[in-house]
Length: 383
Image (cartoon, rainbow, N blue to C red; front, side, top):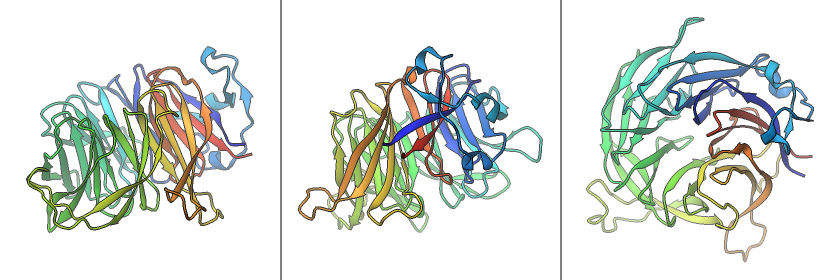
């Protein structure tokens, strides 16, 4: 039986927690909040924590957690390593670590700015760059896998791409205006410099670069309402998206569309990439909008058909885990099988779950955050 075991509750934010992000080594967790702060957390024992056995116990001290398995030692195993108070003038909506070394992190805020933070030794984090340009709320920031590019998006319907020139110097190299409504999230491909944006206009767009010229290479349609976000599989072969329509869609890149008719799709629309929807989790599984999805790879030694686990965070207060495998039935309509293997009801009490994020290095560890101001760390139990 597959289930999630609650290992730690990280308390300190004074307003809803919007997003969580693991560092490249998987040993620290960054979070951001409506309280205008960013926090960095980590287990006291570092990566040894993720290798230890954690007994499951019932936490009787929390009215909202009566059905949860919780490690009672959580308060003594994790600590807040750094706090950046008043990081922005308004809500800090998004946070992510620099992906190559993890020394720096970026925050995007409803004040319209994106900040780059770095520290030396035991000193406090300092803002080394402020990226300005969005007309109003910045909704998401994402660092490319090479660490050379930063993408931001916002309520002004735009996606901005910034290039790092070193020592805190960033230049805007492209402003992409193809979406017709708010852009909720941007996600980079885990291997290539390919970007996907998710929008209130019910679509997703794939962005590519050609000789320093960024353009819309594909428009993904199928969701019937706001597309809140998405996540690539670790190998980059698949892309999962989640929406207000209560479905999860999985897409696979299948080749070239050809030139096509770009006159009605926008000035920078040059379709040359084809993403096909290969699987759908129907709207009967989630009862409200799905705000977040994360994809963990298969555990070491798994079969070739094992594609790992999807986790979703939803407005129905439930955290869900799905097992993803390639289909063994050659006549099946979908090449993938997505099976619900666990539901954690009231994972953040009666509050929305805003973000779910699998640990990139320590398999089976999951961070979540919600409107209850709390960050939770879970362990996937496959027994």
